[in-house]
Image (cartoon, rainbow, N blue to C red; front, side):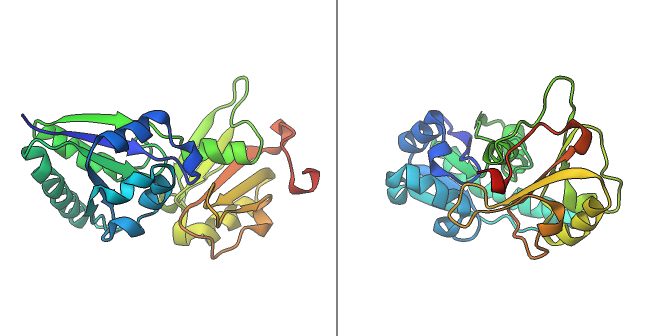
Length: 239
């Protein structure tokens, strides 16, 4: 008998947004993997432990996932991470891997998932609330209505491209390129909302492109809507 790898989304930041299934998976399994070099310093861990205090007593496994762009180095890191996760699986232990938001959306977990599946192990994915859905709820607005398109864009890889798609745009993972993203948005006639650290104690919200700080953190997400299709979403002054 071999163990099963279970990717569990913990949502974007608010511990109350963990699903019942996510909570159950954490409680029912002893081996919990967390991305990073120190499990208890991981954002995913810090969110989950507020909802499931007994997580602090589990067997935690830190899985280093360096943020590098070189594809060969990335592949080497992902192979090493899969090797680490495979050890308890080989012994018959399940491994619950915590990840921010939803595991299927730009998650480092999926690089391990596909390697573990290729090695013949059973895998499972437990959905979490995606960050852009939580951000839209925070803004008290819809992401899409009627026949509007929704575009989810990893902004850090697209600052040199035209970002003016029709419909609603979600700009994720801007990182250090957020200044370039802001510059592009200021040239458009559009409605912009940004939330940094959505659902966390350090959350900050911005209601137009001009106010976006160029030192915004990694967990910043921007929602862009065409002005002529505005849906009367709430502003700070209207609260």
